Image 1 (cartoon, rainbow, N blue to C red):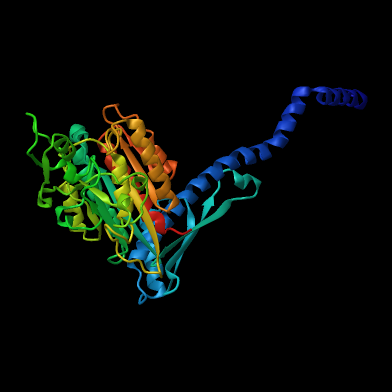
Image 2 (cartoon, rainbow, N blue to C red):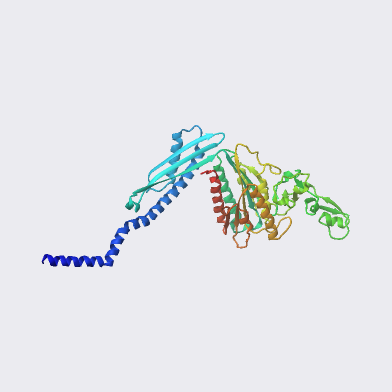
Length: 450
């Protein structure tokens, strides 16, 4: 082949290559492939790292809580750090993360309380970003647990109505409540860090017959109070025996109220609007007093705030289902149990501490009866006002709606919850324990500051 013909053939081939669109696309794709792989692969790498970081945060949070239970002012910095490392290692299961470091700092003062700060970091080898010059990425997280300045007070307002006897709900409630008590006991570093009250409710609550001489009780003065409905009539006209003071007097009879020793300990809702408030009772304002009642379905006596965990569990075990539903009275007495005033007189609060006050309200049905009405909407309206007032006063409310038979259509329980995450709805008895477990975890984490 002559030089001229070779040149001509080469020129022809070059022209063909220049005009070949497929060749251009392939060349352009080859050039663009590296940044495309970097972008797409980077998203995968970042997802892996984010998952590892989230797990690290959870492990640090739990480790911080655990160290706070063990930490004392006499422990050295290296001892605190070793405990944090041990707890973290037991919790964090991401073996692909390299060069993990965990450090803990413990401080304690009378003014600011005790604090554990745990920081962690690690390096994750990349699969795709190494193509663009990033063979690994480092990430970190931290958790701060503060205690000693915050204490927890929790009221358990628990439905003891007749419907709780079905579908295993009462047994499930007892188990769940006792498990929650165990969780709260664990959250207390020393006695008094956590107090709990038990408020079983039906139409009424039971304040105990030992309070029969209490000045905050109202025995008479209205047609539905105790002395008007419990007694005997003599000297009346007609055949039927009058059963109330007003019917006795209408027949010209003399009414003799029963001895207060016959009272079963139940009280009903206060006069409106005090039924939606936590106003302390006073003899100078009759409407603030609590009307004694003789409900046939009187639940077990309430238990004021206590950290006697054995007694609290015994109270839960003593609960028995009977009667109609009045969620509002359970909520009202749950709120009252958290206050340092009559009638339940919560323990004094130390000004050096902060207090988180919580009501957990559980019910398995719609409201069916209170002192004033048997209409669901009317009772719900009172309860909504009550919950609004409690939340405005700084009470955090958790609610659990149990609906095993599909009959409960209540919206007031979700309304009363302090947030959507504080409302739990379950259609099974087993869901009660799930809800209580979640609440217990939430309450335990109230001490996580960061």
